[in-house]
Image 1 (cartoon, rainbow, N blue to C red):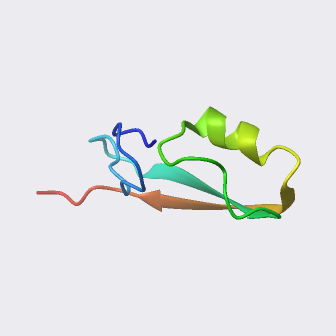
Image 2 (cartoon, rainbow, N blue to C red):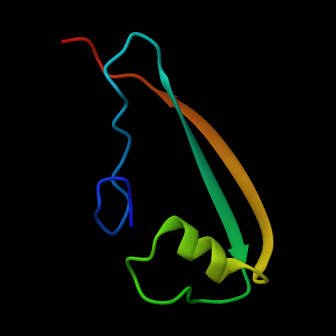
Length: 68
């Protein structure tokens, strides 16, 4: 479940401000193909991954809304 209350990736939607907003993407290599049914919360996904994480990484990007 994403911050928009929907299942799936919703894309960046930074607040309207002058500076760029930072996004942190966490990626995981797991030893399982399923974390349960779709629609679980972030906490539910993290709990399901417990004991199955082989490796992990993080990518940080920035995004700013274009001026109108």
